[in-house]
Length: 259
Image (cartoon, rainbow, N blue to C red):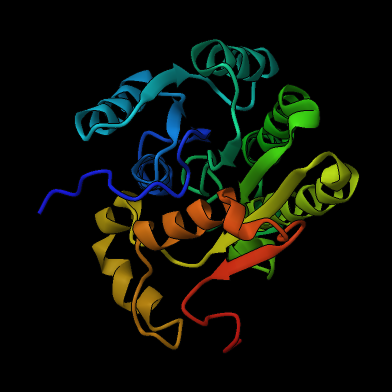
């Protein structure tokens, strides 16, 4: 049954989501729109961003698609500028864009096996990309305040075997989140991080042979859904999370609790 935009938790708010072309990013863009927010859907693949924006508009929401690579400073600046031109302001940001070990050619490699280029690609996108987004988001918000949510992963809270670059980048995202929360809390800018466990994304679905093992890693014995993470992003973006700042929210089915 097709859902329509009914509830308005974020009515008259505007949002920007990076990596909005698929997975958690697309689910979050739709969830934010469902709660009344206008959405700037950003992805390095413009066709994917446009698909997300079109789906939001088809269901009665407001959306604009932008192409940007978060690892490129000038593209991040242009992304923020275009969102501001389109909507006049942006109240909440979800810095979700990132790559996994497959995209950085580091899957299955121990630290000593990593090539510098593999390490650098992961850091450029997953850590420097978040830094650049936060820098220009904070400058755009100024004294008006707002919310920033960073996607950090449980890889930011524990060591992961054969994923040294990914783990280091995600730990760095949590550090950036906490530092920014301290620096800008008085300006009314809240900065928080979400740490998803194994989520049933299109990438995971393509690797169906991995699903049973991944599900057994947490006490709930299942993978999380993209919509479950999106609901957390929506809450953190709203006034209902008005005293949440510099916090790390884990959604992993209890995996870390059982570690």
